[in-house]
Length: 404
Ligand code: ADP
Image (cartoon, rainbow, N blue to C red; front, side, top):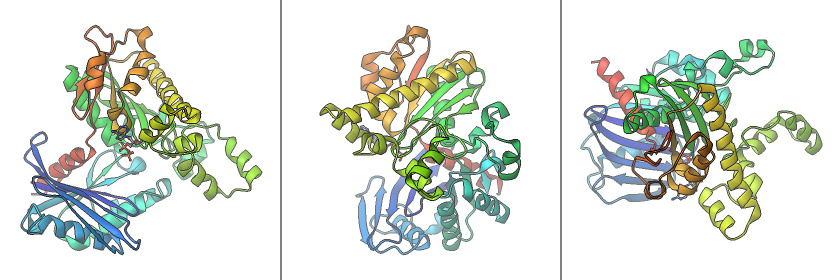
């Protein structure tokens, strides 16, 4: 079954076309990204498997035009990978926020759309764009089933003591203020792959997954189910990130707002877009650049690196205690997949529990799943490249197959 996976942002659409034979037997036919929707010069970058990639620069006024461009690229005689739209049997969309409405992927209908709309308040940068993406795809492929997969769904198994904030209870009842988490699809995928690789029975395991990318979150998973996660009501909570501050004392907000005469929207913008690596380091939100700056003697870049490691250690340590131990620690996403020093230094902090890294295995771990702990390590440690698109494609395939 050919499944098109769509990850729609406010000005971009990432896509992958996968030919799914079964959960683990699939072919990535093409992937790409449409960027700068609504700006004077939009870009489509299309990468068909086994063919030359193509880049087109043109004005892309809205998401509907963006989706049409994606489909046209897929059927293009030169760069395409299918001969007609009819070959696409289902479309799976990534949705950042499903709140407590959804604990798994579902087929899109108007009730589902209403609920995604209700969640816009909790993910104002993401959910409105997802809605645009679904509507655009419905317009260009009206007969094809559309499925939605939520970043929050995997975290719905948390107990109230993990997801409730100690605010007046009425705010939970009136406004659904609680921890929802994010990156759930990634945490779920890498925990399943990691358990297999480490020879663990997922149903009888304690795993901590560290998704460290531009956005970062850490999750405690007992017996395959999420028991706690570091992101909260929104993807701002938890550790330091590229542009997000992570956990701070909430009293800082009114204090700064008064001192600097800031509106709530300005304060939100500062915490989400001007903090983290860029805020603390002052020069870049990118880890590669931060590493280069630190190597050149930039003390604030070094502080960013030290804080990243400090925050991860603190969260992982807390989750080890919460689960009464851990069998496997997994590193994934852009920063953790590509920086052996981060995996080594974080793991070193748990030497007192008997963690031992195999330096050669850790240094060599790149692009491929790998166990990076030494055989004598009390806790296994792994690097697992994440693949959220595959989870979306699998769920979409299962739901679409059930319609037949
Ligand atoms: P997103 O949350 O946007 O999906 P990613 O998981 O792609 O983010 O992670 C982006 C981060 O990963 C950036 O800070 C980037 O510098 C870092 N990164 C990506 N590739 C490398 C690399 N080869 N070496 C070092 N850092 C990298």
